[in-house]
Length: 283
Length: 312
Image (cartoon, rainbow over all chains, first blue to last red; front, side, top):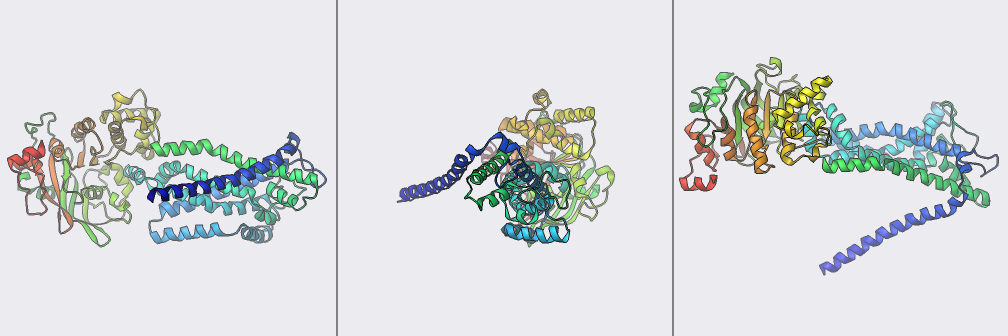
């Protein structure tokens, strides 16, 4: 009976894993199948054409990378601060729980709400207009909780003996955080950043209100009234007019590039993640 | 301060700080002359929330001596050790310490006469001058060189030659230089467990502490690695005070100048007895596996047949 239950459980979990992988393979396969034929060097390097759904994706790619980089720059200090407050600095349990609640709540805020908030505060109140910085800030705030959770988990899982060894040598709490906690929890930060950036790279709603336009933007020269083109917004607009075959091909090619950027981010961080987990195992 | 120390030492010890040769079974290390008192605990009480862990602890540690703390599990030996460098405050929730813990001749005399638990005393500065070695070796994921200099470089700006000098001195003191000098940039994790523990010792020594605390430093090591650490302890105490927590009574007998029994009474730990090497009671105590649970009760010597079994 017990063996039968074990086998049933194994089959059920295996089926769940296969189903999840099948969905992923289906999505990636479809994007590859439909996007690859439309992809060529010109599409990656040329500017958008005069007419709808023509030309290249160069400025969409640049705009997306700029937004993602800004989001990363904004989210990293926020996430590090929140994670350390939650898992390291606050001694009182109640204070830790409050920060944890704040992070979880922030994680649950729909991206469109953050977009509207960015629109009200940055676009209207500060009169930035549509700006890459406004978009990056909103995306940064949006992904900070994901990064915080991943980092805080690593900080909390860091064996106590490391902290004791450092404090026993007379290091202050700040020195211990800088020299022991952060270097040894880098993988958590990278994992969180990847999850967050992948999400940020694909977000449309906040950009709709704060940063992205469909055409007419190139490389931003300032902050105010400096919108950018962005792949997710491009895909969103093209997807609303799929009757045009040229636009459809362009749409799939843009989706493919977006997927490649997310995959590229994951691959770029892979050596660091592997090294960090190796160090944690042997440390 | 010295008077208080003598009071702690019970009648046998008041005869003064003699230098004794080791007992017949231990002739490898010549005893050192104990110097001035460097830590003095008076009526120390440690509480965790409502529970009293240690109560009424009076104890003095002198430069140039090895003091071992022995006692049953849970008596509070490790807690007592961490009281001496305020690491009890890092527990979660922090333990509450009352009474006084005074240092002598440490931190350039800045704390002379003051309790380390007084407001205004920098606990990090204090821990810098009181090194600690834990039960398990704790290495940072870095090279041998970086591990040894880890603490020192956080406290001092050292030139390249000064770093090399400090590194070599610490590794030599920890008897590890000959084994690692040709591979200082290798990951410290490549060392054996015994070498790792000596590396941790070198790391503590590189900060140049005046007092060294060791919390069961050999319990995770095999016999030969433990013997290497034991041999070092005596040498380390020539220039500083060393306090060692151990469960191993044989080890206590081999390394200690004085042994303090941490006993439990009514659920509270206290220092029940402090005996000095040379005291007839010293060897008897070490052969006895029954550690007194009462302040007034000296451990009874075991019967000869029992002692054979226990020590053999």
